[in-house]
Each structure stands twice: as structure tokens, then as C-alpha cells.
Length: 186
Image 1 (cartoon, one colour):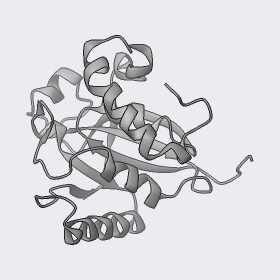
Image 2 (image 1 turned 90 degrees about the horizontal axis):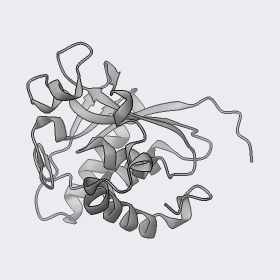
Image 3 (image 1 turned 90 degrees about the vertical axis):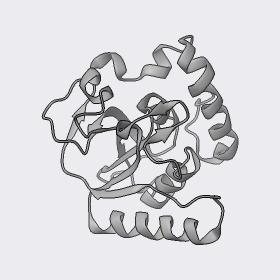
Image 4 (image 1 turned 180 degrees about the horizontal axis):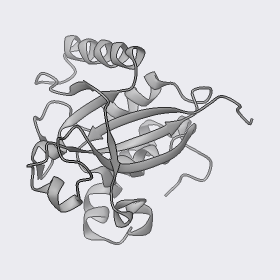
């Protein structure tokens, strides 16, 4: 079914953007995923600068999605279920403010949905610790360098991809098998 709805944007940080990009690329209704940086104070930062932790940016992905095929609520569900939102400035062995859990909302509806989902998850007791996910207004997105785009798909044998990204993808595909794009088995 072809959709004629205009695409919308979502911007999420869940730690390393290589993992996040690989997950969201496989969702039906997601048209494009770009890895990059947001939430910092330096214009046009490089990967090396962001990794230093001094720019204030988070590694994020920017998603172009078709709301007729996938809702922002559904994107949030994937966001919350594919990383640990209770660890401050950390995901696994990746440590620093650049790896923070964050939703950069593009409009008031996105802010309200993100806040509601966060509050409901916190109140449910699903997580042993409080959720520390930042929910902040979107301002600027800087695309990461070309070698960081589509990283997992082009580097499946890279050790980080084998030991970190692939297990995350395997879990994601089991939980969200009904929402995968056709042919999204990798």
C-alpha cells in the first residue's frame, strides 16, 4: 500500500548511534534514518569532538517516518524497549553525555507523548531504577560523517557490530517481528 502522507521527523538518542540506526532502519514505515549529533553547543561537530564529551551533543538518529504506517507512539515504544533508559550518560560500555538517553521532540504532541510514556513506565515499576531519559526541544541536527551512516549494514563483521549491535538486533526482531519491513531479516 503506497502512502501519500508527508513524512515526519523523530530524533532519538539511545547510546551509540550504530545500534539505534540498525534497529530503526528495519521498521515498517521508517523511510530514512540518519546518524548524527544534537543537543550540543558546537556547530558542525566531528565524531572525534563529540566523543570527547565536551561539545554537549548526544549521538542520535534522525528518523523520517510515514505516520500513516507507523505512529510516533510506536516509535517511542521501540525507543523505550531497545535501550536502558535508567543509566545516566551510559549504555553498556559506552560512557559519557554523548551516550545519554534522549528524545528531542519536534512539536508539542511529541513532547506530551514522550513525557506520558516516560511517566507511565516509571510508575509501572518495570525498571528497578528511575528513568533518566532527557526530553528536550529539538533545535539543530548535524549529520555524522559518511563512514558512520548505515554503519551496521556495511560493517557486519566489525567487532562492535558482532558483539553489541547484532545481539540487540536479534532481540529487537523477536519483540517487534510484526512491525519489520519485508526482507528485514538481517
